[in-house]
Image 1 (cartoon, rainbow, N blue to C red):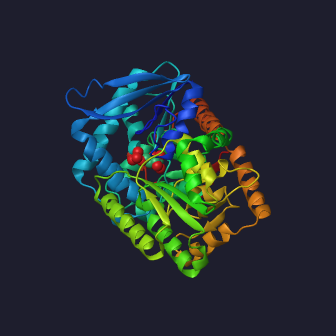
Image 2: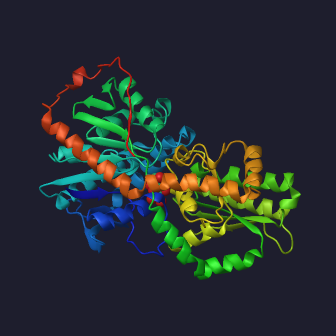
Image 3: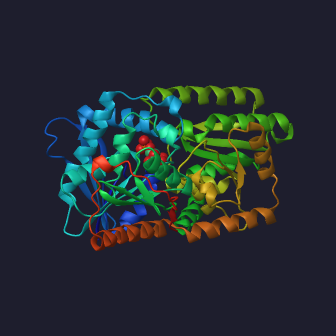
Amino acid sequence: MNLVVVSNRVSRGKPNEPMTGGLAAALLPIVEKSGAIWVGSSGRVRDGNLKEPFAEIEALGAGALAMLDLPAAHYGGYYEGFANSALWPALHSRADLIRASQEDYLSYREVNAFMARALLRFRKADSAFWIQDYHFLALGAELRDLRVTEPIGFFLHTPWPARSVISGVPHHRELVEAMLAYDLIGFQTEEDCENFLAYAQSDLGLVVHDGVIISRYGRTRAAVFPIGIDPQLFAQLATKASTHPDVSRLRRSLNGEKLAIGVDRLDYSKGLINRIKAFDRMWTLHPSLARTVSLLQIATPSRGAIEAYGNLQSEVARLVSDVNGVHGEVDWTPIRYLNKGYGQAVLAGLYRTAQVGVVTPLQDGMNLVAKEYVAAQNPVDPGVLVLSKFAGAANELDTALLVNPHDIDGMARTIAIALSMPLTERRMRWEAMMAKLRGHTIQQWFADFTDALRECQLDKDALAPVIVEPARWPLRSASNSNTARYH
Ligand code: F6P
């Protein structure tokens, strides 16, 4: 199988390159090892002849990276517009933040069509395409329009919300119908997969049976593939990072004080406001914890041109300043707040320095920071993970201290418990989490998805084509949809 992996954001594989999200960090090692070609945005735009996409191509381990300049006229409408102001809020159940114009939607479709044309250049006899994330919901349909018959899989890194929320996205029907051009659609959790199948069955009126949806494209399998990390590699990075200048400086500055760490893109889905309020509450409820623990919050700026992100940045900065003003002392700052990105080589060391990792999103597909924090710990003296029950990672890391990020008092109490947890309990919880991480690595995720995609192709070859005319779409199946889970 000549695999072509597609995502909006890519990584060039430089260890000190700041990572703006889980997807790029996760895909990097599997492209490097598998020999796949990874196609994504160069981060630049270009005017002119959109029929001939321009790509800069470079080697990436055994694979290759192709970075495309996206069409200047449509980039804003696609990225800041439809992808991140309509789809992203809806996918994170923030229907109140959905903003979308017709122009944005058209630009989103144009960029999907542009990417489809660009991919033809990388197509070989036995190619298979694996499309990543909400930026390219319609890319499979565009490829089928160009008569691509090879297997096409799709993986959604974010949650998929309840039917009533996704229905708030303009053109939701058209988009989900376009998604059915994929042979296989992967989700992070059972709940995401069930929400999607429920929409296909109830809103599109399609036949859904055993995780398979029948549409005019034929069969689409929907299944669960929780994404993992390479825990061994991350542990090695963390050990190595202990001598990194930033990590050494941090350790020296602590003077025996304990550290809690949060690392997030500056995004409203990450629950930063509630987290900072929880620390405020903790220092109020337990004044003895002042000077004995501080929070290092790294909040990497993201999507700054979008109003909701600009507002969040001001709100978080104001809140941090208020909390530091109230609880700080002439020689002690309760929250160290950094608005920049760090490479994984440093992050691994920062995670290992912190006795508590706070990962408290209001809603998150998986959240790989939670997994990386665990993998980075010192096995003889591991830290404690405080994890939102609304992160996909909570399904696997169920021996973390799980919290409801809307319950500020509850979070404050839990962080205090984490700080005083005895070593035996910390080790027991950490070992159970490590066993999960070792059982579901990123390599396993890759193998599970690509094996399932191959199976879809075999099924397709074995079965007579299913043609369902659009006029007959409102078919309903009486059976309940059982979703498959692949680990
Ligand atoms: O969660 C989906 C995702 O693609 C993550 O990989 C990453 O956190 C984020 O979205 C990327 O955001 P952006 O590319 O807009 O910075």
